[in-house]
Amino acid sequence: MDPLGLLLEVVAIAVYPGGLFLAALAWVMHRAGGLPHGASLDVRGLTAIIAATVAAAMAALPGSPAASIPPPGGATPNLAVAVLLLFVAGALAASETWSPQRLALAGLGAVSLLLLGLLAPSLSIPAIAGAGGDGAEAARILAAITALTVVPIVVQPHLIAGNAVARGPVVAATVEVVLSTLIPPSLRWPSAPVAVVAVVVAVALYGLLLRVGLRATQREHPSLVAVAAACCVAATVAALIAARP
Image 1 (cartoon, rainbow, N blue to C red):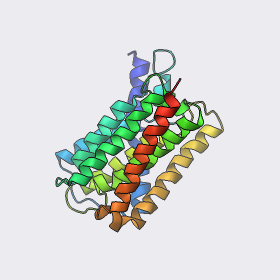
Image 2 (cartoon, rainbow, N blue to C red):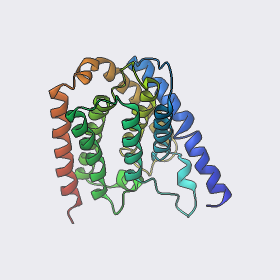
Image 3 (cartoon, helix red, strand yellow):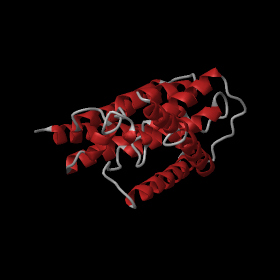
Image 4 (spheres, rainbow, N blue to C red):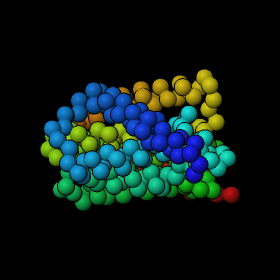
C-alpha cells in the first residue's frame, strides 16, 4: 500500500467510519439507551473496543476513505472479516457466563449476515448492499433484523459488572456494520450525507428500543429468540431465492 493508501486506512480506523464516528455513535446509543457508565477498562475490554473499531472502519458508509484506497476502485470491506471482528469483540465484552441460548443466538446472527454473500460474487459489503431485486432486499432486511435482535441478548449492554464501558461501542459498531449492508453504494451528494445522518438517527432509535426492551433482553425472552430464529430462516430462504440464476 502506498503512503496515501496507508493514510486513508488510518483515517478510516481513527476517524470515520471507525474511531471518532464510532465513539459518537456509542455516545448517542448510551444516552438513548440509558446504558450504564463503566467504572474500569481491562485488557479484555480494550481489545473488544479495538476489534469493534476496526470492524466499524470496514462499514461501507458513504464517503468512507476505504473507497479511495488503491488499487483503483477502492479497497473491499469484507463482510466475513467484519463479522468475525464483531464476534470476537462481543465475546470479549459480554458476560463470561454463556447460556446455550446466547451461544445459539450468536451463531444465528453471524450466519444470517454471512449468507448475504450469496447475493454477490464476493463478501464485499458494497457488492452485497448493491445487489438488486426484491429477494436480495428482503434478505438484507431480514438479516439485519436477526442481527439487531440478537446483539443485546448476546452482549447484554445494560449489565453493570465487567466490561460495561466496552459494550456500548461493540453494540454501536454492530449496528453500524449491519446498517451499511442496507445503504446502496451508488449514493452521491446530497443523498450520501443524508444516509450518514440516517445511520446516526437509527442508532438513537435502536438505543431507545434497548431501553424499552431491557427486561426482555436480560431474561433472554423466548419471543426474542423466536423472532431471531424466524428471521434468520427467512433471510436464508430469501438469499437462496435471490441467488438463483
